[in-house]
Length: 299
Image (cartoon, rainbow, N blue to C red; front, side):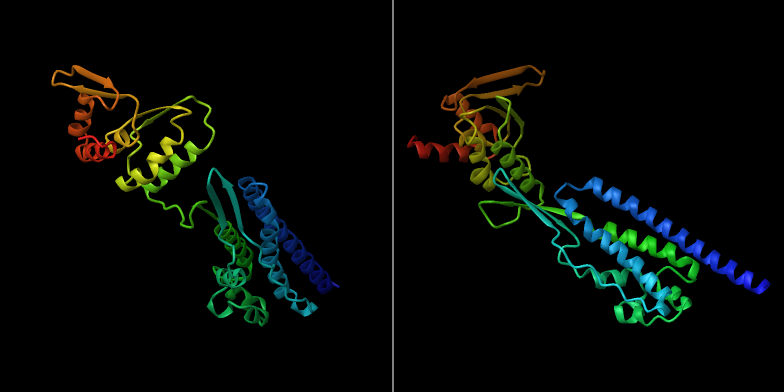
């Protein structure tokens, strides 16, 4: 009778322990799921099913190994889903891609959870006892450590493969927008000047920064020209191309002498004094003025 009580008590303790483990795992993944949902847009929330299935898959592997004698079926890995979204706006395509997109997640999950000799479905199915299971799980050496290790590994796995990268493509070309400061700046100006700006005045300080002369001449000038008849554009610059090629209506030259006294000249670009200022004061100004005057047929 005493032995029977001990057996029943042991089984009861094991059942309570399993329920406790399930509650801990459920709680951890509820927090993960809540955070992911808060960080994602409504469109991207459609992918949550995949996250849930990955989480449940890891738990089902554990249940399969522990309850193999009950002829449980090894769980099927969730089907892959597309992990990209594309939004077109202001002449650009903004492409957001999750790391799980088109990735062999099953192989990766086995690799993240299990040591080298158990990184496949077939190897995991052949685990015969709890001690072998404990040794097969990364970061675990005893059966009691399995749950903590699995929770930690799956949490890192979900965090890693739900990370997103954003790329930008120009609708008029196939090339991706680069990540250099100049390319980012050029994209920013096109985006901002393409959209409907509420203000009647656009004020920019040194728009040429980090942008090459060729790109200024081929792109940036066109962006400013696209809004010059709709908005008052005021910019501070050291670049002669922006002054000369934009045919600005009013050039303001401000200089300061050794006594910090300001001297100001202002007028249209065609004024001889201001052409001289542009030619002498700005780097490459002489060449820019000469090229522009040739266009006008002026010596």
